[in-house]
Image 1 (cartoon, one colour):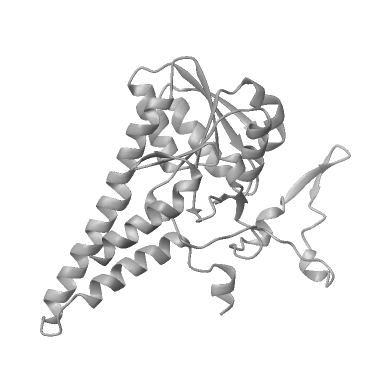
Image 2 (tube, rainbow, N blue to C red; image 1 turned 180 degrees about the vertical axis):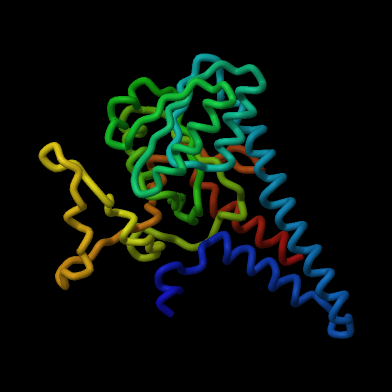
Length: 272
């Protein structure tokens, strides 16, 4: 139960499990075990191919229409579909710059992204999340990924995404979320506290830090010995529908208000 509390089933995991369960219910009782397993393997492979691999290719196709010569694109964290989008747009000859935003404790993701982009010839700027208000004025578009999209249009993504979207909204910069429709859910969530994933609290602590010109052990290293202290490392945050300009999916570019429509259409198709 503790593990489930720390990491409940994500929306994507739940949708994949539902897909497999529906396939199991359709297997006739007289089918042999080996044939049933082979059929399920095929269902799983088809789900991965159509809902993830091919869906990402379609998202990239639509999203490239929004990248123009001279753009300064900002992204946060490391979304695989956004990474592929930027690499393909660059290989197609579009001239643009990328601002990669980094924040602890998942700074390695952003570092790997900027390393990959730079090694492929993409002009990059690497900044911390604390510099976002300064750099956002130079940005033309914001591209980010998502972990889940709720029926009220809210976006669940890596912690820090909401801050980026709020600053972009305040400075009138378009925020485009790239997400496959298998991440859509009919659930509604209003904040990031009611349902989230707990990361390792020790990830919030730097092992050493500079104090008065000397490298010393972090003052939080012994936090477990202090009964009144707890460290909370939330993996995701929630971005309001008001701060999302557009969602780019494999079915096209849609407003965040259309999420429940897509969920309903997919449910009706899966029933038949």
